Image 1 (tube, one colour):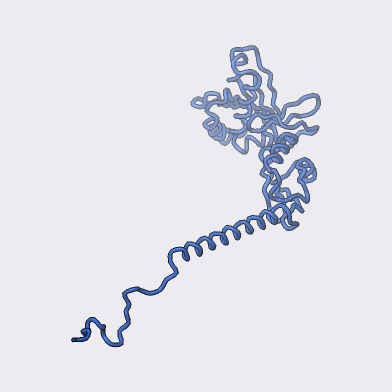
Image 2 (cartoon, one colour):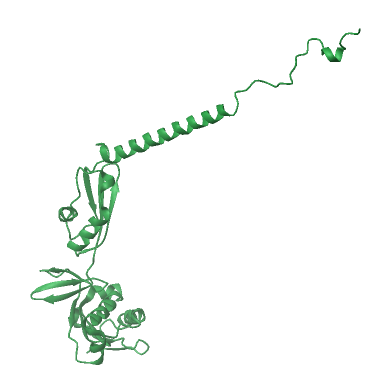
Length: 264
């Protein structure tokens, strides 16, 4: 009886690989990924807790100093007193918006203010003060009016180079229409559009109605301006008239296309 063939016995020295290599099965990779995610979550939680502690609990990032810039009439001391910066508090917890509101409410001379964090331990107060363009005399003192028509401060001494407003409106339709505040804004607009040289020489801006605004300059010169309309055109015309007639005392630019000038 014949024995098993070579094919049946298999080739000498060749191992049976039909079963494939041994492996750990699908459960092994799943456990590894789960462990990795847990470790990442723990690391993120620890890092978050550390950051919160640094910002709020540590002594590293706390307010230790205040700096103020932009003040001219106001002093650093009075601005910082009103700001009431919480020295020693965590810098991140400072309510900068509340500080800005408090400064604008209690110090009307402040036009704008930015309260900024200066890391790691400071607060910066960046102030822009209102500039007076007109003065309104009141009870021996002077009320300062800015370019927006805002009455923001009362001073005992008139600032140099700021004209006085004489607001004496006559009963008219323009007074009923615009009111005193509207006429004040017109005067402010005129003052803001004067040529630099004329602005320096302007002592009084007089308003009797919407279209009856005049200027009194140094050396008893008078400018009839009219309304606040076409201010830039009137400014150019007035500059040309003053160059052409330097000794003139009366200038009329109320109708800038037909200006007039006279010596008396």
